Length: 278
Image (cartoon, rainbow, N blue to C red; front, side, top):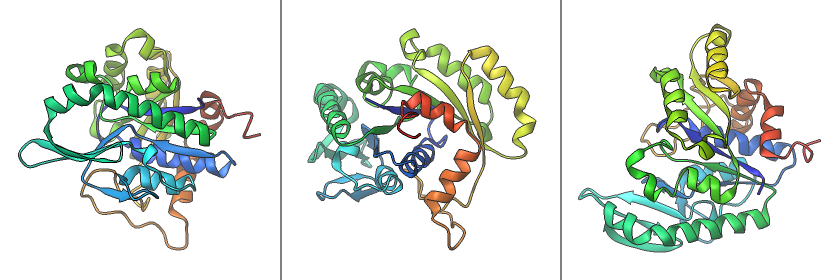
């Protein structure tokens, strides 16, 4: 299928907002695009068109893509309980409370099948899929039961863009460490890197870009300046939605901010929609 998967070096690096921007940018070029996240662990949900809860992030991304949100865009949405159990919605059905370890053991095969069905359904209806990963793709204790990162990229057979948050510090180590811990076949899927939440003049980071590209052999797609007034609710945090400038479509404003600071032509080529956009 045509599409891209956005992974991060850690949680809260900006994957959801990057995906939101890509959905709007592709939609603005006439591409029928859909968001997807296989499994989300979040208390914040919205209702898809069939009434099934999905993550707020994928609901927002569907709005950005100018399409109706469906359950296939987020087939598994989980909520952690105070006692350590998980509840939520699994393929449209209410999940009974289950421990995290039991969930991984009992539902792994079912989850893989459900994720494959949802991807196939979206692929039948859309020209491109923007897939969001979860946390880091190299949580080594979780890899055997991974259903949110590289196994999804393999199921969809799409390339990966890796997002790193420079504001938290350690951006070089986080990028290099993530790539080093990936299997060779997984690393080969990573076609570009985005540096997110940069405060200051991005031109001052040119030496950093050159180091990353030289050391990893992977192009830096762009350095995104921090933009606090994007006006888009966060995926799974209680942080209040920031206010966007009045009189401006906040999805257009945010996506244009991203487009101005990345190599959009290169990314379209990676996604495989360059011809369709001409």
